[in-house]
Length: 510
Picture 1: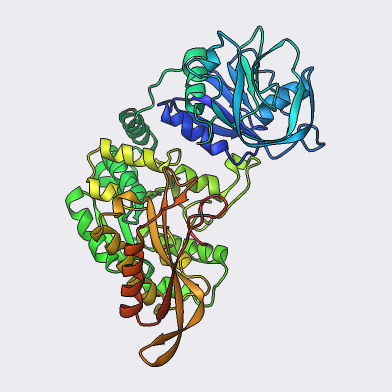
Picture 2: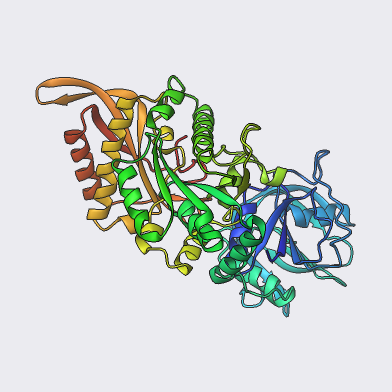
């Protein structure tokens, strides 16, 4: 895989957004922890240092040795990275006298600076720090300021090292993408060759070399990720790919049958396995979200192990893991970013299962996966499917799981999703679903008092799932959907709509 750009993670909540913006420029990049810089950096053409929740003045401040990078590769130091160079290399960083957080505007931009080509004064940027650079590092030149931040950007002379005290990767920095392009393309001379077609060619070649004539078993979910992974593997190893679609009892209404029908025309070798009783038994009495995920993950592995033993000489287990899955499940490559939640398909296999893992999509964001699928000719309807969590409805039923709760949520979800399709809203939403809450409320139906379940509807817009905003669905649609759910789904008497964005909330409730 081509390397191109190395992103050193100092623990910022925005590190993954840097990678996302770089990929948008058709440039491949990888994130590694600040303390795990690769020994061989010859394949990289530029380095970006992320922000951090730490202060460079603190005793626990990340303090990596950058000697094999600095002066040898172009460096863009963002926020903490910029303050790092100042604090440890001849400048001075102090606590800011004014709160430097939120929107700001560039009031001064030094003429002739390539980093700011095409960016005008008054351009909006996003600040997020409590420290500020009072004195620049040795041999530095100030190249931009805001009203409150004198040293908003600088350049170190004699090398291609730049520091900025704002975040170009976030949406609120209106010319952030232009700045990243200026640095990567004009300064670092990185080729913009990261395309879906290039990924397919490279990945198929790598899979052929890695797997050879071995047999691979893949767990299909019916979603975009596993489907694209299956087609990639099929292109590489053909009949040696064995796909299994498991009914875990937590799928959407009628999904087991419809997904099997969907795969018939794709040339894939697919076997359907109904393990719904096994999964529901494994979840009996389990309420904690992490324990649910682990129970589901273990059950999946057990099913795959059973099925793999029916295939002679199977060697590999393939998974549709994508970049946000790995990012949210563990600190990035063991780095300082916080774990948000585990994913059922991340974290390796138990000792008893002697299969090696292959994850062809593990470095892609969701929209990149869709681009790769389109490149390979996968049906648009399948590629346009909303993301659906691997643990299924288990993490949309808050609290313990029962067959009756699954029935209720399947009916509610079906009404909501079909309504989005009927109102031509489905493709305007990135992800939608219903959540069964662990509370009941008083209601009145006819002349009778009821005490039944509450459901929440959730619809968000996003590009990669790392950030998301709630969708302002029409009141008329919400009104009709609520009425339909309450009238048709026995056990529900109240419907609410979730208007939380990510962050601070996550897309799923568990």
